[in-house]
Amino acid sequence: MSNPLAEYLNSGSINVSGFLLTNLATLKINAAELTILLELQYFRSQGERFPAATKLAQVTDFSEDTVYELLHQLVSKKLIVITTSADGKDEYSFAPLVAKLSELLEKHQEQPSATAVQNSTTASKSESINDREQTFKMISHEFGRMLSPIELEMINGWFEKDHYSAELVQLSLREAVLNQVYNLKYMDRILLNWKKHNVQSAAQVEAQREQRQQQSAGKGERQPLPKVPLFKIKKDQG
Image (tube, rainbow, N blue to C red):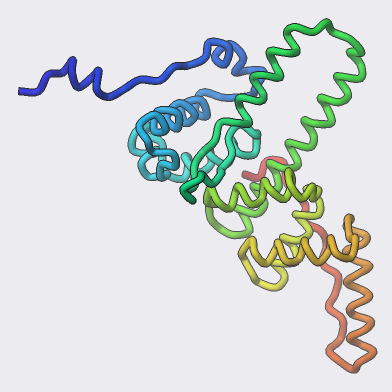
């Protein structure tokens, strides 16, 4: 006969930082996101560093789409990141969250200074985060599906590693949609081409487009395509 207490003890446990729990509002972590963070930590303690969304959905009673959305939010908020371990396997890393907690601890030890400048910087960062979150939603909407964790990490890399602006990523999405190619690799090629030609704004994208059209017209090729307006991002889209 099974021993309930033994089963309970053998199921393992995790430690939760009290500092994390008392700073959820500051870190903008909601209850659902915290649940996923704790589940990821538990699976990691059991040797499963990259649990499938289906498994997370089973243990949390969230839908699989909701799990994908929550993972997307955690990545876009820089709370987790997908990395490759030494054995070549993907895993969820809590390094960004740990860095944020360390930063908070340091701030608690510092005296407040230059409040107006700090508020301005915070507002600017908040606006940047909102633009990025909107970009994730736009890509998911145009692709007609939830983005996978790997896709979320790739998009996040455009912002963090390549330092593309949200505007430029949205413009690359427009180009992909116009050409009916719904994948990130195509968008990445567009962004690399623009980077090569130092294209960094909507105006420069349009100038490059017009230049190509003029060159095509000069060679007797097809007539230039009409200009297509930029996406109108709806704040309530999601």
